[in-house]
Image (tube, rainbow over all chains, first blue to last red):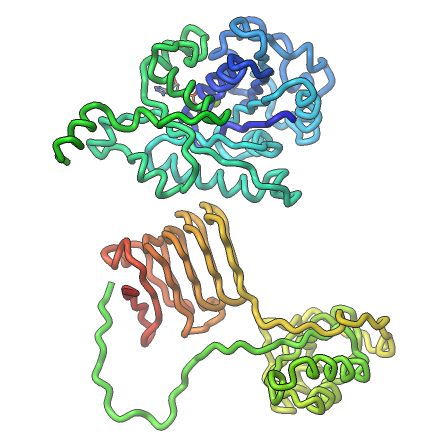
Length: 269
Length: 248
Ligand SMILES: Nc1ncnc2c1ncn2[C@@H]1O[C@H](COP(=O)(O)OP(=O)(O)OP(=O)(O)O)[C@@H](O)[C@H]1O
Ligand SMILES: [Mg+2]
């Protein structure tokens, strides 16, 4: 059975596309046939982060309108042949996305792929709604700040009421927290919420903490998902997340740095 | 905001109005045939004669009225009384039935009755086929229990008590005609006694609410700041002032 994962947040710029690119690559690298779909019509940039922007011919709206077949629109990733990308349209209006159209595409993809990763646009409007509607699992990307946490809470409410699973009274969407752009220094200086604060407010299962990292920008500039930068902290954080999602037990990292460790050791605050 | 200054009470007044909540069985009618109703009532009562002996009961007419089945309220009351029950209220009645109820000294619950329901008296002889067990239902609870976190943007309403076994997020709103219990942090808005029950209370494990209200008397977050945080608390109304008190 295919699993549909939505990567969503409510708030913009928190790292949804970065996460979608990383985890879809991670799942494919683990041997699972995976497709990642860009739902951000009008602001597409998943193809940039995946480094396939020059190979985009057709997009999801062409498929919905019957102007191209799904297979014409899918782009095979250059680094991993188990991974495909379905780009969004840069030029069309997002009204062209329809629930029926998306439903048909997902049904067809489910026959062929093990994991379908949906990169949601920001907000709670149509694009975000359609990205989450058919999901089985939701990765809630949150930054350690009050407004991002609040938006995540809002999205969780919508997942619980406005999704297909909710409407059909099926088992609810499984929700996971991904705390991104985490900076231990800024948590210490109280500029940012701590993991505990966020957990307290959202009470969600933590799938992983992704540290604030220069490697993310470097990776997206070169069009290679950061998970392939195995030496980078963010790359390792995403690799852990994929492993945990697939059921491996991995201790959480990037929460306390060495300084924190010593402070604990010597009982300082 | 204000610590409740309790004035020393002098001699107690001769009468005092106190609002209190009772749990009373509601008799929902789905059929207007008094013979059948009486028979079914007797059967039910035989199952637990002690429980029903002189028991107060509220009659709910919304279903018969929705089905446009004519029922004479006076006859119905007489029929129910024969079985030993006391009708102490009616809800879901139409204008005519409510008038009859008042004449008989039976209070009318208007918040539940539907003024739009128009009765077509030409249908007065309609009979629905008898379905045993579905004819009469007893329920005594409108309480709502929520087991999952209530998220920002969600709104929950309970006609009775509202019990939340999780947290209530900022930007969420919970309302109850009765009490509100939150076995978690309360960060959103909580309004108890929204139909005017001044005896309603709010209980929670950790008060960080944006707004709390009982029977329309409210406090906003700024006024709550500094109240007991991170401890189980209750909130109740005393002389039109909300009192926030630790439970332990
Ligand atoms: N862990 C991280 N460390 C540092 N920078 C990051 C990290 N994650 C994301 N970024 C940066 O944050 C910006 C936004 O990231 P991204 O595009 O993934 O967010 P988004 O949630 O998809 O945004 P939108 O809501 O616009 O779709 C990018 O410039 C990206 O490089
Ligand atoms: Mg994005």
